[in-house]
Image (cartoon, rainbow, N blue to C red):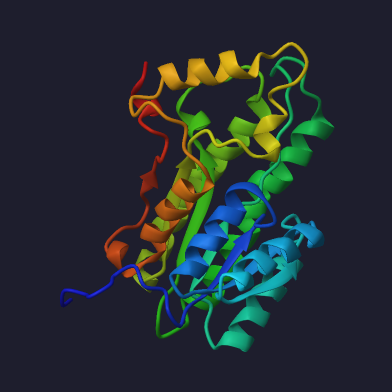
Length: 262
């Protein structure tokens, strides 16, 4: 492959980002759109999706809104088909949608556990299968990125249902990368570091000192600062771009180095 002038350019490519109506998903959508991709902003919250699309378009980039419940496999396949039909190809699919709930592992009930796993794990499976089915048959092969969490690297008492679901998605991604390697479709994972979003702000409930908690996180972060949603977006950009054409089955950890701490 010759040296590329801009291996990070996504001009002419389509991208679906689930859970892009807010938080990390919004950051990913904006980053991909900034590099020329036409982004389908998929979210169960239509108002959130519309707001992200408006933000992208105000910046002069291209995006469409898509209502998607990732627990519905048929809906994921329908969205993949509609993007491929509208654009001529499905080039990028980012499984970002996720939910969480606080509670120790000894007391989490089945209903809560299944609610979280349906979104965080089955949502990844549904999106990956919908995308892979089309990407494997295209002339230009696609890239799938699954967003997990740095929490898979350490035990966390209060969010056991969340981290276990993300750990399952973590392993599923590697297995899928092995399966799809021969087709040319790449599958990678971003184990996102701590980012303050609507989900993570719930952590600052009654009895939690936000400033003290952030200071503790800073002390565990070798780079000495807390990242944001765009740091996660740039990690995704690398993995879906031609710069990573020889990368599959990898786990990228944009977390300031916290996973190095014992």
